[in-house]
Length: 262
Image 1 (spheres, rainbow, N blue to C red):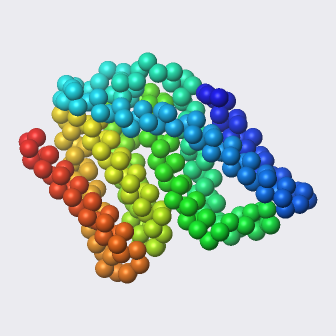
Image 2 (spheres, one colour):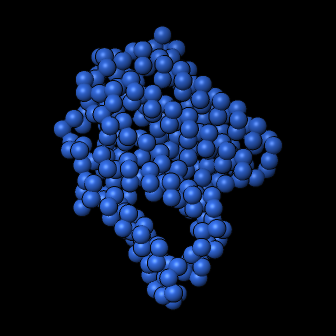
């Protein structure tokens, strides 16, 4: 299936969970949970191709550095004006809905388990996995949103910068709370998003200076915040130290690019 049929399947999969509260017995209840999960996973998989386009597309700007803002807005910047975006536009809806559902389940985990009763009895690591996946899907949904809405090149760059800042905030907050799964996936998303928006910015000289300057500030701020976090608590020290080192190196790299370009 493709296009806007996928969100319909996703809604049907979510509706299956309503049967968990029915007096069907534990095996039937678990079957409904597994069926709903399978439909949700399939919906996410069918929504990933435009995400791949949004992540790989900015590489095309390496061949036209400072040639000016691309024609065709966000889709032109990705070199993907010929794709059927009318159908692919459902992808961010699916990804953001699933991300929101997972984030809500992570936040109110105990309430969800009480509501589901014996039909849902996950292991101790299940909550961490749910929390780790939620920011990835949310980041992926927002990443593809500019192309799906066909916004301007400048708006695309701005959205990607704000998104990088947002996932870095989630990563720092996760490390301070000791939720390493959330922090690690958010850090990876932030790093990939930073490379993505940096490549996008190469199309226009003003965008290059603005984006690399913003990334310099963001990476330096993340490194400083994580330094304070590691010093304040011995929790996930190695993960925090690794993320801090990557952020510091990225800040230095941005400074080098700005110096050379200037």
